[in-house]
Image 1 (tube, rainbow, N blue to C red):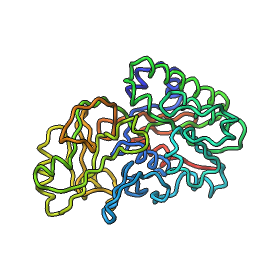
Image 2: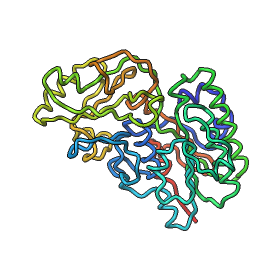
Image 3: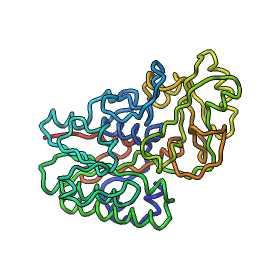
Length: 351
């Protein structure tokens, strides 16, 4: 919301006035995979199973990115559309959104890893650490809508510019002003379009990092502290985020561990697994024994020390959960929309 309020985006704001625009909430943890999965399935993680960007398997004691559709337990909006005979497309700046969310989709395009045919149509591949990759994504989406028979499209951008620049900084203002124009071009192409717009998370500057595993180890408690933000785009966030799952070696240490972590400066909220699953609609089999949320300017990560100064813009906590909800082209009761996933949960698909 801070970026929307600070930026010169007259077209988006006009669409919001003509339809509906309000502040809503992302799913916690406020990270890409959890929220894209929630929007693309119209459900919470308790149903679709994506609880993190980086998943730890307690049985095998191994961890990996949660970026495959194999992890997804709920049908996608594309599968729902296909059952109705509708044709669909997904265009994403990040390849991981494609690999996680595109099941059942007819046309799938990734700006990070575009196929030669799309480079021919849209232009040369752009760097992931640039504003240009999002412009490429919008051009590809517009091309598909112009040349293909598509009933439903899911367009997802990357947040590199927000990781790098605060809302009022020049490059961010330029980026969002141009996105605003690209969005308006597509709406102008299709006067009867229905548009549903939201974000997977917000963004804040962080000044201090914590390593919960080392904090507990200093008190003779062995654990694995899994940072919820961890993926190939380390330049974005240095694998530092505002939420963390702690897997204890001995479950008997849980009460003591919760006490220690609750008293640690920088940790805002501490939940055992049962309460975390209930409060945040998380899948109980895919979270740790303890769930941590950081204060606004703190992050968790696999640091060399208990705590270290950091300089990064990142997300994951409650403080990055306020996001816009926009509906245009159809009449809805915006009071019924609270979460980003409500855009698809309440979407009526029709042939």
